[in-house]
Image (tube, rainbow, N blue to C red):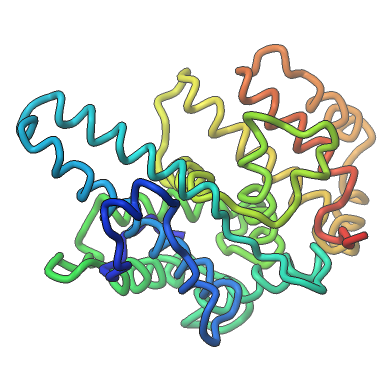
Length: 301
């Protein structure tokens, strides 16, 4: 789940960069599972964006060292990031239902991080060690690998882990991982939601969706800011998806422990959207509709 760059030669020329989006066909080749393909797709895409940006910025050498250089570099990078979004990663393959694909990628992600206790859940220690290994594996040649001594990275990993630990039991389980992937899937539909919210669940994840969601998870925002509000809305949406779609026996057990008053209060919380930002309202609207469709069990028609 880290944001990283890969030191990989994509063979891009300036003309190719200008005319096309990053080529991620390498992520579709080889004997990789869904989670492996997701990592490879992220790495190749980021490298393509970086390389294309550097190539085009050579034409602005006269601006080097100025504010105009920084502004132009950001503009150029955003252009190629936009191209990248034209080639999203899809975790639903031919012949699979949405539910089957979601189950598979969540399980593969859990297995990739469950490296110490091997009990089907991810502890913070496992999460931290896996993030370090993953980040360093894709580190460009010549850059210093991160360690547990890098406080900023450790804080980012801890903040991300806490964000994903939706039920607060100090581990990340498969159903929490499913909620994460559902949110990554629908995130690209937030700005322009479809008429039928279920159409947002197509299994396609845009590169910018992974970037924004990853940053949202990894960084706390100042209290009272729009960023903090949207961060809370995202986590609440993931929590509602998790609570609604986790195993039936767990849901029934919780229902039996919940008083009638609490049930009534919970039913009135979601519609109160007047205080939310515009983006927050769209997130909540999509999320409420998705709950009705039970994305964990959705079958392809």
